[in-house]
Image 1 (cartoon, rainbow, N blue to C red):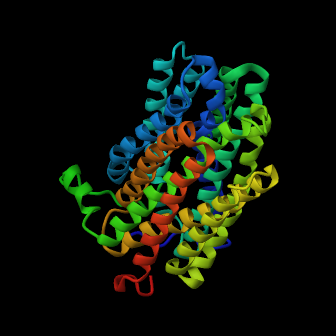
Image 2 (image 1 turned 120 degrees about the horizontal axis):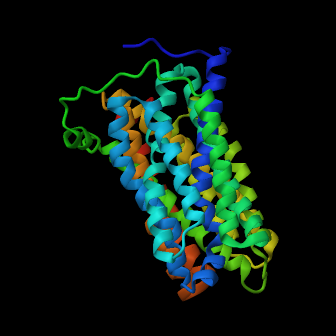
Image 3 (image 1 turned 60 degrees about the horizontal axis):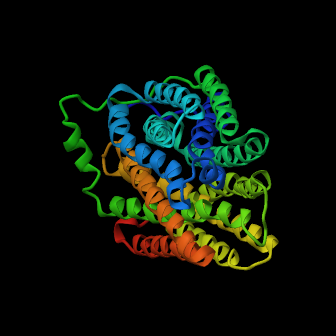
Amino acid sequence: MPPPGPRPGDPAPRRTSAAVFLAGLAVFAVLYAPQALLPELTRAFGVSPTAATLTVSAATVGLALGLLVLGPLSDRVGRTPVLHASLAAATVLAVLAALAPTWPVLLVLRGLQGFALAGLPAVGVAYLREELHPSVSSRAIGLFVGGTAIGGLSGRVLSGALADLGGWRTALGGIAALAVGCTVAVRVLLPASRRFTRVPRETPVLRQLARGFGDPVLLGLYALAALLMGGNVAVYNAVTFRLESEPYALSPALAGLVFLTYLLGSVSSPLAGGLAERAGRRLVVPVALLVAGAGLALTLARPLALVVAGLAVLNVGFFAAHGVASGWVAARAALGGRPVGQAASLYSFWYYVGSSVGGTLAGRAWADGGWPAAAAVAGTGFGGALLLALLLGRSRSLQGR
């Protein structure tokens, strides 16, 4: 067994954390850039709001499927080769998506892009847990999740601003340029895996994958991920339609500014990781979900200031819950002798399955019942996640973990 990774104060954790932070920024900027463009895409291609949400859902479905392949693959070939190849392929596809000539071609490219993007969520948490000392890994995972928050923010805000200047193609092209810069930086900064232990090749992939479903606690965490992300994406797939409609009638650039609330997620996630080390995950996750639910309830108000405040509170709770739950999965898998990369991939798989389902349901809910209907979809997801978190917290097998 390789020795524990660098402790606090060593320079290696800073370089490692910076590289994975930038990788998270690139991946999630590309993944969620179309979310701020949904009204623009309905106009450009003459499709319905429900169809427009498929630009997000196609990518998250592709990402979920990619996790089933790239997670087990990383357990055999290593974390860094998968991560570098993933970023390179996704960047090329980001350029092609900005040039897509038709709606079907755009959706196909987004699906392929999602598959390529799966490399980072498949290996990011496992890489940090393996390469860093346990005393710093939880905070580094929190920083990684914070990077995904800023990536989601950057993709949405930048694409909204660029859409005002030159339409959706300019917006996606600008996000592709950002991805190029991050991909190069990650290639330079990211240390190669030194503490990775290869899973024997004689272990069949399907048998290896099935092991991830043998622990009821992991199953509960996977379901929690699906419900949590389904609720979050339901909110953000519908909110741009709401903000560009009456009584707000905001431009794409102004509507995109609402995603600045994601900055709070980049703060709450590492803070929650540190709190979980002291108070325990069983307490932190339910409290974070209650915070997210309170934020969602606040968005039902009509004044724009209260809507934005509600989204800010929701992001604090969402990213705190996600950051702690993803670390919980890695710790649980390691404790049970299961491949960490595989467990992290399954968590992310269900996370993005929830995203695809919740995001598509939100498009239909918005078309049928406006914001209250979309908020009901999100509230169902958060409420189900809270119930699961409480049940997991009562499990005797989690005592002291």
